[in-house]
Length: 377
Ligand SMILES: Nc1ncnc2c1ncn2[C@@H]1O[C@H](COP(=O)(O)OP(=O)(O)OP(=O)(O)O)[C@@H](O)[C@H]1O
Ligand SMILES: [Mg+2]
Image 1 (cartoon, rainbow, N blue to C red):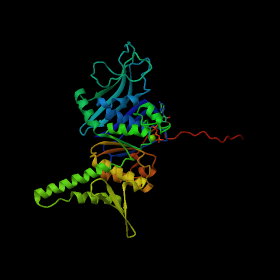
Image 2 (cartoon, helix red, strand yellow):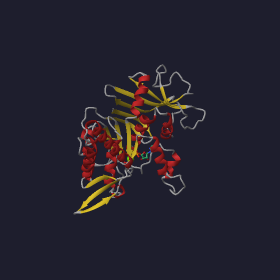
Image 3 (spheres, rainbow, N blue to C red):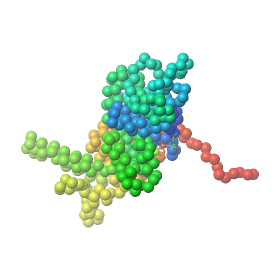
Image 4 (cartoon, rainbow, N blue to C red):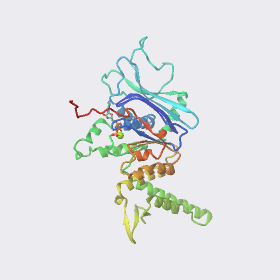
């Protein structure tokens, strides 16, 4: 899967967005830049929610939350939210997401861009919050250059191939509005805690990942499955395989000065640090912010088997030294090369690891700053 182009005419802070991610660029890693508040996080979340949730009824509340405040203008029947072009390996599939007012009465001069005889797949027919409770509004998806049934299947397949990684301190627009407000309130407000709500959302949105979360269980599972593969090989050939050793070696390469070990009871992992001859045992909670983040991303990509996917990553550089910001490009290329990565970033070091053509920007590139110093002469 490859995200080819995304167009967003007008959604929250995003205006006239039209970004192309070239299919033949190598590596398939595209930094996305803008000033603070330029709309990077909004764009990544919009793409993620539309592609991850639209075909799953149980995920519909996330779509509705995101669309809060997106109104169809009084004199219109529809309003385009986003047009997303995806390469499925053989062809370009264009997905046009738009909201429609089902009760709107057509007038002859209505400039409705959508003709009625095309079949639509309704991905969200719930009432989208609006000021007029008598009007039913839905989010629809039109498949251009693909048959609607095939389109639905494609969207289903795509929902397993789209991922969003972001810091947990990020405001997630697909959470309910009142829970977003909690981030700014008193966090000791019983179980109404932003992070608890985010955790619950994460358990429903399997494509969502927050960097702070070190998937120790995933790591243990992968150790166990390597052990089982080795044992099966012993049954079949008489000698143990080396999957377990290979996994340890790979992780140690990543960790550089530390050696990873599985606890004997399989309940956790620890790290041996050779500190000038003294052997120190460390636990995941002892790792540094940046080390933990790098290891988390690796484990997430590797052991969730994220392959041939579109991976959207917000602020991937936070906590990394500029060397690691630069290095993360070759890390991603090495760890899971079949994916396309779109990295919302402020990091020069990260962009320098790619060609200038890889780097996409959301306008305005520069806003003229009003000077506080008045020239009175
Ligand atoms: N309904 C809205 N209409 C217009 N602008 C909005 C609306 N809601 C939020 N915004 C603006 O959108 C911006 C939020 O954008 P977003 O968080 O996507 O930016 P960003 O590029 O990720 O910034 P940063 O680099 O600081 O993370 C804010 O400046 C906010 O004021
Ligand atoms: Mg942001």
